[in-house]
Length: 462
Image 1 (cartoon, one colour):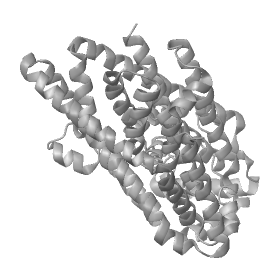
Image 2 (cartoon, rainbow, N blue to C red; image 1 turned 180 degrees about the vertical axis):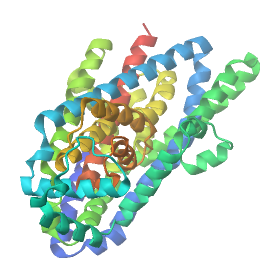
Image 3 (cartoon, one colour; image 1 turned 30 degrees about the vertical axis):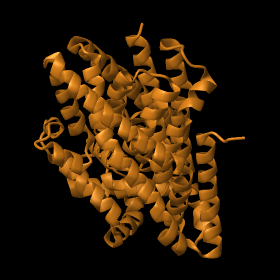
Image 4 (tube, rainbow, N blue to C red; image 1 turned 45 degrees about the horizontal axis):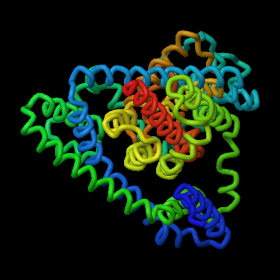
């Protein structure tokens, strides 16, 4: 019996994890890193190689194929409206769960008090007023603990991973309020393609596609035929890559876990245990989105696919999102699943999915909301309703601005933390579990893209 592609990918993932455990036990992690992991990186590079030109030509072809600029505008508003609605719901869900479960309060009171004093000393150094007007470091009975924290702070070193992200976040915060809008409009399309930034490419593609709608039919037909032919070439390239994707996924998973744990099997088994409560809340929220919210949206607004049927048809895209942690790298597979398995009009998918891969980050926004409140709870900082509303707004906007690449959400989380006066360097606390959670939230992002694409397809074809 011939196995379906998604089963082959699952087998590849399982074998990759088993190999990583075996290599840790046998001391082969260096071999895995040097001789197996590079094939996983090659796989991601191949997907990214195709993703941007595929977005460029598919968006142009989709818009040109619509034929009516007014129809395009209406579809654009529907798409952005639905994406924004699901993102706001995801942030609200994350805030609700973390406030109800309160994973940050699972630490001992002594640990949280030490954390609080650490926060107060940092806030004083940064000139940030304490929002709750409570000063534990001012109390005489805490003097010994204050000195202990000061000594620890003097010896602490910020990891290069955190400092790089902190530098990026600071640049983003200090930039002009309209800098994000400026960045959308490229000065050179080839530079935009080379940079790997998707929003400028989508802007150019929409601009180009709309212009094609306004030129004489005789000329536009030639352009559309050429664009559609290029699209077919890129889709065929995806077919070639997918035939060997199970092996690439094996290498990707083996390399990822080997990098995280090295030859220490105990570290591999315990790497996520320290932040179990936080991870559980994020996973619970992501599970609700993927297994309840999106199927419910499909049932209410599409009614075209059964519960199991929907997941079966998009399984390759979900598994690829989990493996690569990149909506952009997964986009070619997402387009193929939606068009071939869900039978969605290519004109719809070519417009809706690239935009979704850029602005629809439900999983990312949910994680940012949970992480911000969790860290505040850990450091005994009680955030007001107003501050939590600030987190909701900032997380929604930050998720839209998150690059569709692995761990980009961490930089945006720093901005979310800064928006309510919390220390952005606290991301170091959640770094050990971020990679696996990043894989999960990317899966949610991609699943949300396909669900909204199916709803838009239903709306446009009624």
